[in-house]
Image: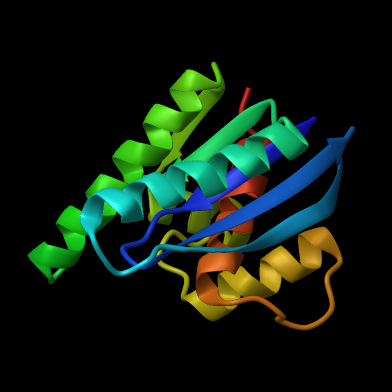
Length: 154
């Protein structure tokens, strides 16, 4: 089964694709979808188009998206919420099964500690996917962590 994990953001979106075969996990592709700065309508359309390309190429069976949690900057929170809206709408258009997870749920699933730091999560992502040292940004690592978490859900 192919699973896509998505870490929404205001200026870029992390994505990570994994393949599950039995209990084994394999890294397929990961990276960042960069969101242009302005105007807003173009930003959101660009995100939708970039996500569509990934969905059409890899045809994931499940998709996990990080839920919003408390943020300090309200402006950023609104921009992330807009990105999440575009992502969820695009997934709905593709009739994909969506799993929404909180960051603490992902941390707990990968490290056994719901308040683990990003470095601990990145190390476990590398371990589970047999990746060389930390090669990805936090956003990419988080997206792969979301995909791994979703792989364990029924």
